[in-house]
Image (cartoon, rainbow, N blue to C red; front, top):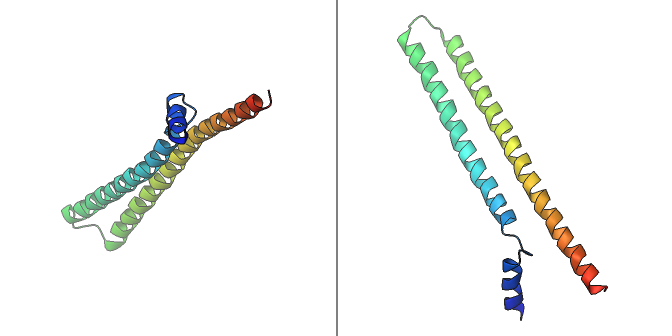
Length: 113
């Protein structure tokens, strides 16, 4: 009866699949965000070094400052993106946690009848 009960919970939407999917999406989102920020940083660094190679008048200090700005910008993008992604996932998980609690309350009320 345990297996059949578990299957019926899935079909009656008493057990939710979405929280697992949201956690998986969070990990994938962080991975894509990391690769995206690395790509943005590399692109900015290539642009800075390309501009430095094109004009011989730039000194080393301005190149270092431009590379540092690219690094700081990339770090801000990463942390802001991770923060927004985390809040979005937490909101969805909270909604499904409310569902779990409501199902538990319903179960207690049915047992007390």
